[in-house]
Length: 187
Image 1 (tube, rainbow, N blue to C red):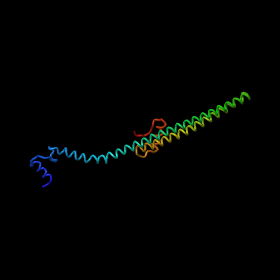
Image 2 (cartoon, rainbow, N blue to C red; image 1 turned 90 degrees about the vertical axis):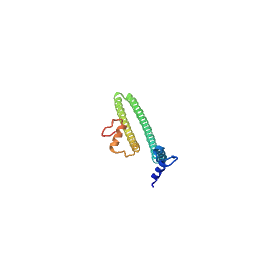
Image 3 (cartoon, rainbow, N blue to C red; image 1 turned 30 degrees about the vertical axis):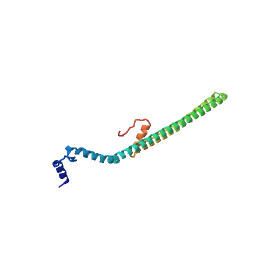
Image 4 (cartoon, one colour; image 1 turned 30 degrees about the horizontal axis):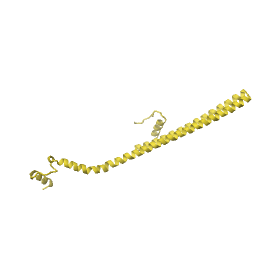
């Protein structure tokens, strides 16, 4: 006889009525549900919850690193801006000094020399401003490129895919520049 027939025969014909794990009326379903559950819990914990928890912790760590990199880039941008302001101040002091010297010479030599000195000082000041603007534009462009690179690296790590195509670079550069991104970006 098969085991199932034997168990059914025992439960239906036997006296004393004992516990039959196969008989649903005697609570067999509940028993087997608990057995399956208790056997499955450690497996679920090891196979599912462990990797999920690890992946979440790694994602949090990557996010913290990206935030720290962005904060560092922001500090460096602020330092560059301060240096540019100092350079601008020095250029203004130099221009003011040159203008003062020109005024002194102009007073001693007359009105004609005064106009020549002012013209020269204006040209020097404009050249200094152009130079400062050019240096400032270079620094801002370099900072933006660095922010774009850091953003793309952070996005690549967060998204776990290669982010760096020309379209991605252009999109990130537009976002960093404060422009409304254009093109065929999908949101």
